[in-house]
Length: 323
Ligand SMILES: Nc1ncnc2c1ncn2[C@@H]1O[C@H](COP(=O)(O)OP(=O)(O)OP(=O)(O)O)[C@@H](O)[C@H]1O
Image (cartoon, rainbow, N blue to C red; front, side, top):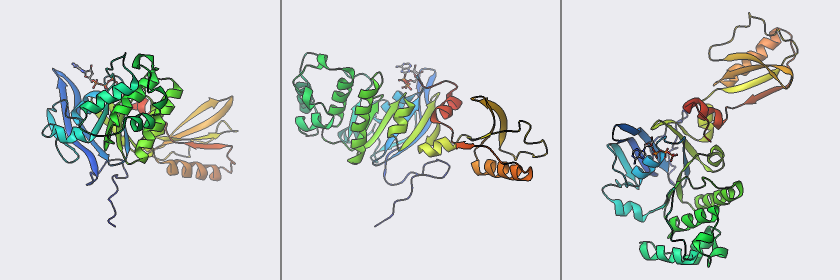
């Protein structure tokens, strides 16, 4: 069997493989003078969950609209299932299910009637009961849409998006505004989709959503993709931290010169003085620390090595917290 090329470089840059469902290069879009999407590259591989993270106005929705062919890009190359969605919109839409930020339902008809209405409009075929079961809404089938909770309405959105088992599902903020329990229910539906081989692209304001679901993430800021890769690749793009408790507050003496690329500071954490080393090269920081302690005849106290959190990466890029 042919072995597929890995979609990733070690530095997180993506090599497009022949299994890319979405391959966007240098996508640009402006609303008048406002450049909302600036030279965006995005490759999404078949069967993965890809999360696009960003603060309000980062350009996520505009990017999704371009990917679906709803909005004409001003520059760049785009292939979805190997075709340009602007030139062959029908081909792409037949294979794609979409959940928009705000779905417009008729409130006074039942859940089943809503899905049946969708059935009559869709080019794909499916079974109403299956669609409702998949999203865990079968027990609400006879209820009106207005009687559903926010989480149940999002599940109804999802039931329409998964209608006919599309290969690609695009979800614009599928869980915004939901309580933690409803969010978790939707996460489990979304991860089941991946289990069935569906490719999922979603936008989110919730870091924990990206952490819980995504195989790969991209952080968007000011219309650009600031960083992309697997979660560990993205976290490795920022310094990790080694923290060690110190009995001797004067250690290390000045002659233990720090290597380039390692930063050191002292902090008081829970009443204890600690030394904090930060570096993208954790091994370099640890080796220096061990050697310096050995040379001083010092036994180090409790030590902790932690990668940057997604929140820190995000803050570093955007200068503001995500939510
Ligand atoms: N129809 C429009 N006309 C003018 N400007 C727009 C329009 N739609 C979006 N914008 C602007 O373009 C930028 C990107 O918007 P977009 O909706 O793509 O961001 P987003 O990351 O999806 O934000 P959010 O998380 O709030 O949905 C924002 O500055 C927004 O104000």
